[in-house]
Image 1 (cartoon, rainbow, N blue to C red):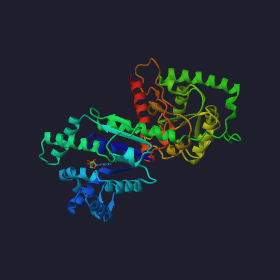
Image 2 (image 1 turned 60 degrees about the horizontal axis):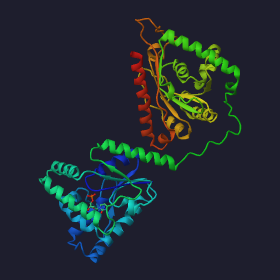
Image 3 (image 1 turned 180 degrees about the vertical axis):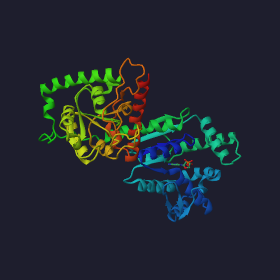
Image 4 (image 1 turned 135 degrees about the vertical axis):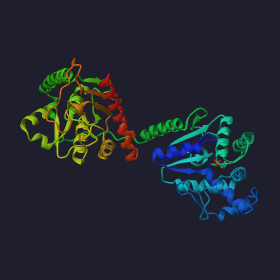
Length: 457
Ligand code: DC
């Protein structure tokens, strides 16, 4: 997939392109650096930059490699050498040469063929990659661009004045835009973006959103095939009216117990889809968590529980009444993923704890990689859930919870739960795993902070 970023110098293209590529897990191709490298070769060879035959000869004997972050000319690393004002000034004539452009366009297409690239330059969206997934044209107020460039040069120790920078920039803009070949103009389908008063973070954020939306639209997930036969763990009794009665009864009983006994507070219930599949991803503090999730969701939920918890008859009866499906291993292992996908296909809402186990210290732990695998295959909205207070009320080692009754001023360990806005699974499925895990962690963590604030209010 190709994303192109074109526009004049100083509009923030390079930094934005590099950051965007990193966020998307794409490679970054700085095509301006390629024109600069050819300029360096021409200056070194004292080649007449207006003579197309001489330039054609130069190009024929030239090898240009673009490994990440580097520019290698005939085997020599010239990354630093091509950033001088002299090269900048001389590059205009090289960039106007048809033979140079023809060759560089071919190389750029070769480099990016079959890969995921953010390509930055002047003609990437118009000439080089007209079918790019997403095209941006960044521009900014000329004075602001010159100010940025002047700051950059001064930081490098260059003594050039602001006026000189502005003048050179105006000349370059006019020449780039007016040249006959590959003029610097926005592609008709490019998104034009004025960066004058934006921070780099804002620019990258907006571009990333746009790209991810297009990736998701280009790869619609196939509709879920109807299950040919119900999976072995289908909770068919959930469809019966007996179950509904039982669920209502339990709901009222648990709600009363949690509110009166533990001062439970809930927020964000409108974020829970009322029907159809939904995947709740929550932090895991305590055995109380499934109850809290069930109360917050306001609809029957499916939970996964270790088989060992079903050993005791009474415990088994209680957790079965909460629609617990027994699995060998807690968390999002292979078996858990299969079970969850089966339940989602049946249109159920499932709670999963991506940390894999209850926290041993009250703080959130890193998410297990299995959650990314699950999200890649889950065709359901994901609701981030934060739970607070459950660790204080019933930590891992406790057999019974310590109540914190309503209207009891000295009570500590009150409970709260917060449901966040549903997330689109596809966006996280397309991200590299580490990034997806980090972002999902942050979403759950943010909800936990909200729950914590609610609890202390
Ligand atoms: O973006 P830059 O300043 O590094 O670009 C160096 C020169 O190359 C500049 O004169 C514009 C030109 N260029 C071009 O004509 N087409 C591109 N795709 C990239 C850069």
